[in-house]
Image 1 (tube, helix red, strand yellow):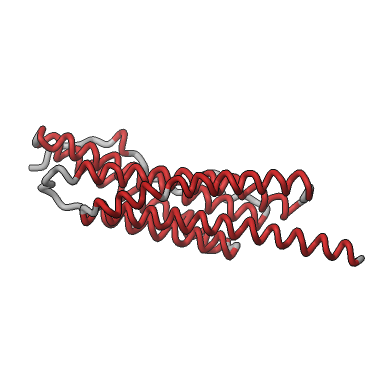
Image 2: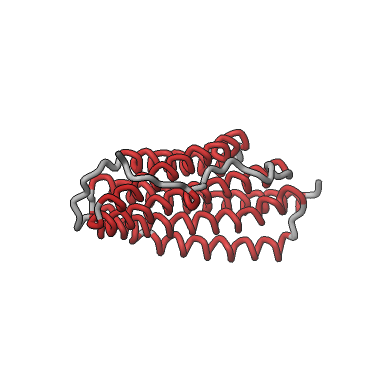
Length: 239
């Protein structure tokens, strides 16, 4: 390999590492947003909620920076095969991360509203769901930084568990609303929070699929584990 060609390869590798570092930085901010949103719900921590919302512009700015960097790489480098997959995958992954940040900010905003209500029921199910989603997000950001397909598959498979928890929370909250109309407003906010957490899990799973394809060059099965049948659940008042 000529000295010039060797320089080009090293320069391209440097750019790929920079792209990966930007995505990891974006993932870290989003992970922090989700943790702050969970803290805001469980401990009625308005300061944590505010910080989660304030992080959102940073995520949006990083998404724009990554998009511009990817366009520049595509135009100047004309990558092929695995390199092309990694660069195109970055656009999809950052799109999913940006949506996760939006959902975390929405959870945080609703937690502030919930602070006005005395909730006569346990949030243990929601806490469990928030913990599961945080674990998914941490694992997929690690998988992204390490190009770890095994970890990506673990996240992909864990989606059913999150969906099952969401379905149980959905049924429980609907039951509380049926029993006492005063529960309707706080339970509606909790339903939206639970749905936002479920969507965060879905986007983590999307990232898992993209990481797997970028590394392996082949897709995971079309039908991923799903358990979201809440819209069709038959709800009966508790005895």
